Length: 124
Image 1 (tube, helix red, strand yellow):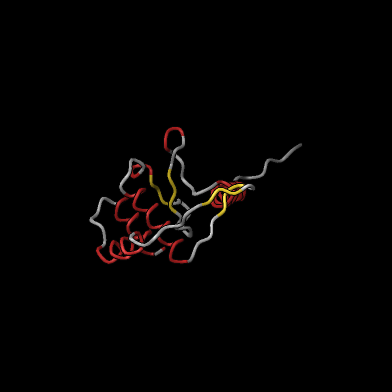
Image 2: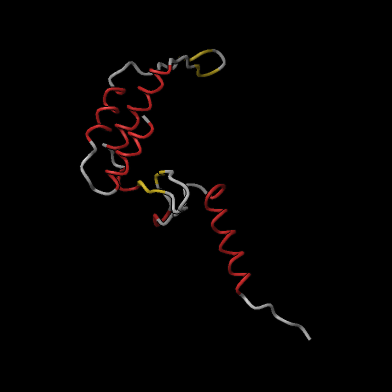
């Protein structure tokens, strides 16, 4: 399921036709019975089988891939990360899946690289 969703999101982002095999995997899962949340005295409770969990994920993927957020889908700019995210930042210029993970690592590495190449100032 994960690979099918990733393939379909990539196809959509690149403006390509959906991969038929990935589409079949997603739609087969989406046809199954999804999770049914229950309200209890202590809050929300969910009992789910793996099949129900996958059906719920598949249905959410269908909603995402057929909805208005498609133009906002981006892949993380970190070359070793393959996370996809919805860029709702002002100006839509976000580059990383998250600052706490990839963004911080890339920025710190760039800073260290700049410091390494900048000649040290000498004081008299």
